Length: 181
Image (cartoon, rainbow, N blue to C red; front, side, top):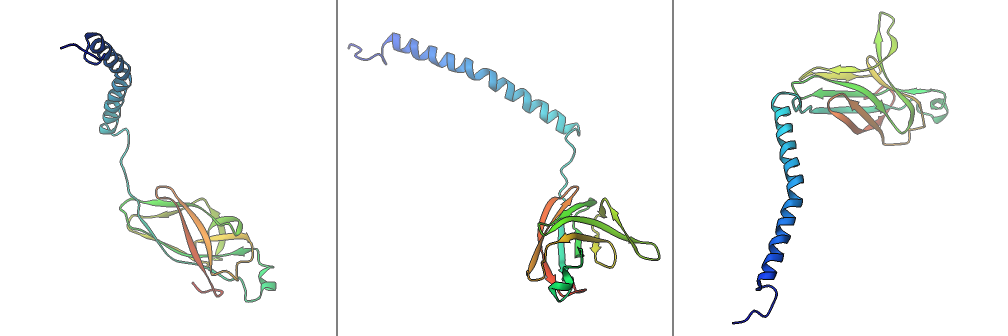
């Protein structure tokens, strides 16, 4: 029998073997790097360097923005809008509400009422204890929309809340009659 193709000839076998050798040599560098990287990341994680994965679960309810007034002429003179929010921390790890924003407001502030006169002051955050609840209302700690666009004709107002651990959450707060959640 005679060989009629290069595939069965000794020259073809040598070429294929050289190609596989070159391919293995080219793949060896990235493979060795990947193995070393996985070993280093595993050592870092097992030594606690990567921290722990904490799942913060929050439940946001009673989200409402009361109308500023029944007439748009009176509403246009009021430069803030208050909110009602109930935020429950369903996890065993504390979290913090760091900021809020809304496309209908020029800015949004976190405020608290303090002292016997009930003065409102801006704060940088609100803590939400583990398995606890944070109540935000116009009558206490609150999220205040500053210089909002008229929203009284809307059904909902988007609010984006930023938490230290839970990240960013966008909700739709119902527009309600003045003073009502």
